[in-house]
Image (tube, rainbow, N blue to C red; front, side):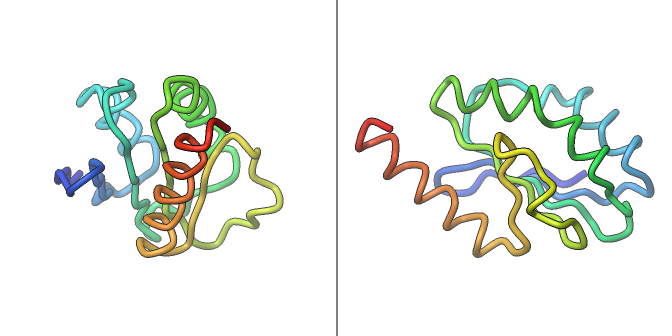
Length: 110
């Protein structure tokens, strides 16, 4: 797992060999804490499924309740099947767009 601090968010990139390894490392690093905006890039090597993404549901909801953005970059998942509470984008650029849109929504009081 690679963790880097960007201007307004923490970027987390997976380099593990399985989704369960990634989730274990994610919890060990206490990255589920609601301290700052997060963008998580899941490697295509993880073969992430919809069930895997659902493990982020409570984390995403906790972030949203505290006015913090949480976005996952993941390819190969039908976005129509993902719960609305989880933000999923196909690229880093689109994930950053989600961060901007959510910041605007918070500023407008939504």
